[in-house]
Length: 211
Image (tube, rainbow, N blue to C red):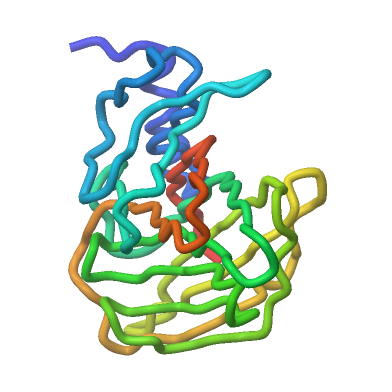
């Protein structure tokens, strides 16, 4: 069987250990009100919406609970998930919460929690790490969670930054796990506490090269 030039290039990237995009979705070709192929809804009212300039995945305001979607291939380590997310507050005290995750629903979840002024990392439903974080409302933010292995230890790196800025070189949140979970797909999470929709765009899963 002959391999195409693209297949040969991707195979070379894997051998070289370079980053490789495993999944990407910007919703630009998905009909409004529908869901794209390859994204599994785990709860909540998700559908593709449209703004003035772009389409995105919208999480509706009801019910007010933790909701998620799952996407990309199942991986255990050496992978990064990233998404652009827009949440809006309501008044002075009502804030959404949102984030991304790795290793499936029982794996890791990096959450921006504006009401607490925290960036939080969960393993399944257990909070394992938190750091102070000031959220800027009504603006797109990039949320990124990366994992890589150092011997038998899994290193988790969390980053969040404004869309128009550059991502921080050093992670805002760092945690080490000596008992990593099983392989699982990437996730994106939202809780519409503020009673306003949460928007997700530019979902990406990337295989990482060696650190």
